Amino acid sequence: MQFTAREDIEAPINAVFEMVADFERFERMAMRRGIEVRRMSGHMGVVPGTQWETEFNLRGKPRHVAIEMAECDPPALMRFQAASKGMNGTTTVEFLALSQRRTRLSVEMALAAKTLPARLLLQSLRLGQSRFRRQFQLRLSEFAREMEERHLHGS
Image (cartoon, rainbow, N blue to C red; front, side, top):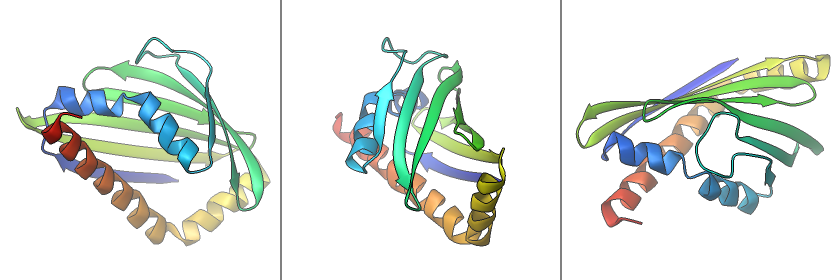
């Protein structure tokens, strides 16, 4: 199962890359949403091999997901691998300079089930696929507007 979203951002590619690479900010955002996040390695910046362990409840059950930055090619690409007991996922974040002040941010997420319960979970996601795709795009749009504001106000 694959989801893709794309947004154009009024900010230079290097600024957008740096904002996306602000992992501490994402960790704090996740914790505010009730997700336990522990960075296991990679405290020195944006490098392949950086790892996180996460715990959260989904559909009433505790879930554990290990995430690793698999690839990083500044300022063009970041790729993350995620693995849980029953599912694997890959998230690719691509940056494309449309002009000196405008960047296209593309995010692609691919999920694959390894177990029957995970297949059932993915099947239920497929049934609500259009709603999930809209939410995915909406979240990226909100994030893009936030990055524009941060860039404009230098925060």
